[in-house]
Image (cartoon, rainbow, N blue to C red):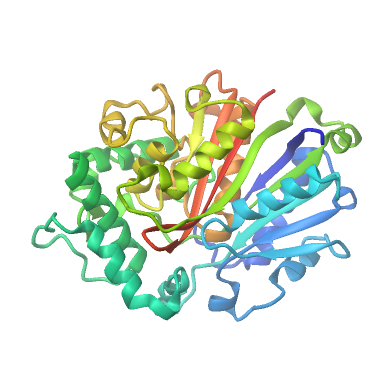
Length: 412
């Protein structure tokens, strides 16, 4: 088995696209990725399509992938529809990598697209309700919210406006971390302020205004300790990665800008004690990826991690072993994860600022890391970046994410 590469990437701006369907957005991202790779639709041999809300929000169940592929000029190919909650795009990428590695094809497209902003806001938020086992919804909620016991939310720190149940769960994760390690609301706000600052330099980000720690702390609350700028928005958008073999690279003539896939891992969780960090899904996925790639956390130059809230970045920085357990909050406050710091995390602005169109999210992260490793990120460029880490989680099962993807990419 030879090496596998990302030879082209494309991404639309993330945000609210009132006049565009998910298919329009997917078409734009596919066309951009093909141009980037110097390829045409005729070069593509398989398509892996990621989306999570076409059925619940638009009534398009069963065959969203074949429809999206035909819209994008990729009809007649093997097309696979992938749904894995917020990790859908990363799962599509993983499957494309496996297909190329297995010799099934030389060039595959991983496409993620989502149209989440609709007029019916209640239905829009309800789309998140199936991100766990719906047959045990009340039990799920009780189990997850119990993790935050021991830290009492101050009066007035919960929004009266509707928000996703996932925000309550993330708040419980926050409070547990605060109780166990002394993490502070200010440290969580420092993560959000850093990401909003990074997004200023990302022309494809949904939000591009810098915010200070104080502005984030005094912003409207969601549920303690989370405030609005600490949380990802509802987003529309699409992103694409062209995955190819060495033979595919030669055919396209784009070897000079290709990025090598060192490891691609997707795992689901197992039942375990919440204090057993090494059994956590993110830790296990990261460990497997490092072993397969032959590198360690000390070798990583830049990372994009899943931060549906700022707390997600703290948890995932620890799962990826960038810092010891419980130390990500202080590291963020010291600026270690900022551009110019020891290990820049989410130079794109992260999900909090760049946006979070579920099916496209993981591929949007891949887009950023490929751009970084090529040295093409402009004012948000991480100098000397050679090895990148990508983490993307989806859904909830038990006491953690239902699925986590970790990818390691290399400039060489």
